[in-house]
Image (cartoon, rainbow, N blue to C red; front, side, top):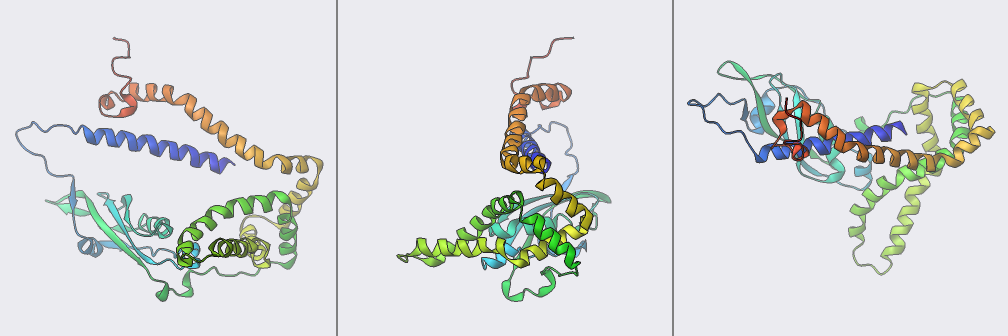
Length: 299
């Protein structure tokens, strides 16, 4: 639950930062000095930028894209800092199912610092990544590790509890919808298209009943929890308090998310006022400070 709250506030912060940047771009500072200063950022081609690469991380082909048989080219706009570290990655074009993997990989790339007249400058460039199903190897496939059979059995018992199954089914829906969007057009205008899509949905959700899923879960749990941890969790969730928690978990999850949204909404005016007071240079530029101009008491 805490992870979802973090994601929520991260999304809110990105929204306001983007709004501030947008407003600032609409009101660029004028250059009235007698001499133009040296550029702090230069544009270079993708080919030139590639020669400066020192550390290139290959993107992992998303499993959901493989399942949906999605391939293609992802084009990204990239800003490289003066130290060669990627500062910003923005989507230009390409299949949505491949976007996150492409961006995650490029964010880890490192370049040699680019010099202009002996001084390091930021670099603006384009990165193109090609995802080809025909060239995919097994290097990106999960590696099955040996997990104690008793541990697997205890994890299976834990997973059988409703809280875990309901959460897994709920979390699987967005992945399924992503696949369905790409698969549905291939069915054309068949009269039984709805029946076929529902049958495909059932096959997808049947994965949640497979023994392979328990094996995958066991491998993940084994990295962080001991068998005693699993047994203790099971004992708690089978206790009266645990059963009460299980019954309320989904409602708690929804309530906590709503509480975070409500708090953020209530605090936004005060946050804006305080932030804009600390950064007067944003007045007239950032939309969040438009109502703050002249609101501060004179000294």
